[in-house]
Length: 108
Image (cartoon, rainbow, N blue to C red; front, side, top):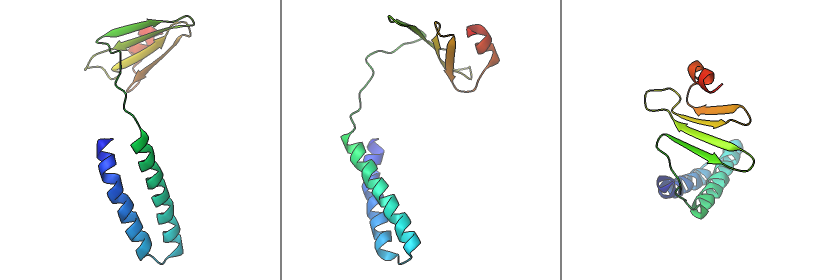
């Protein structure tokens, strides 16, 4: 985010310069659209506030709530699916990375 906040103003200026140079109506329309999007994105970036997590976990974390239990697992560096989220009451699980059959069988 820091990188984008410093580079987007330069990109906006470049888009403005390109817009001023071009005479082609199609290209002008495209550049104007890109400029509007870049300006809106930059305004949004400036208003964003980064919030660091208040809770982290090493291997697993189980959250018990009134309506459901949420289980989160770190499966290590050598697996394709390193992080897994499981909702036991709903019979659902999801992982980050490629799908692995043994994980489905394990959490099934």
